[in-house]
Length: 114
Image 1: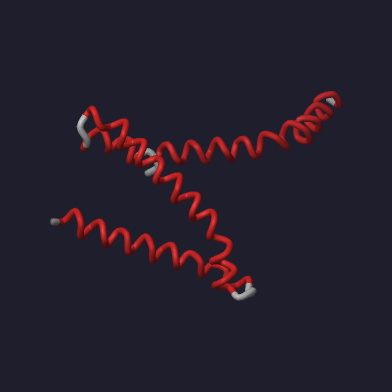
Image 2: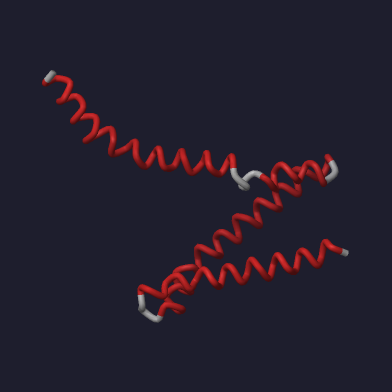
């Protein structure tokens, strides 16, 4: 019995420390896969000609990476600018990105409507 407890303590102390971040990363990847993450890669072959699918996918993925880099670059500066040092106002930065999402959705809906 003592050997089992010793083994369990070893597992929780050393192996559990590495399995928690690994399981979180695994969960993040799985939730991306079943959510809206791969939708552009599924829709592109349906709406584009066969010879252009790889080019359009490359452009879409490049734009995605560039915009993610831009958001990561300006996020903390915009958060600090809008919060004025008050930790209770740090969430205001999401209003900026929500407004950008709304404006781009409005633009594309008008563009594709007619």
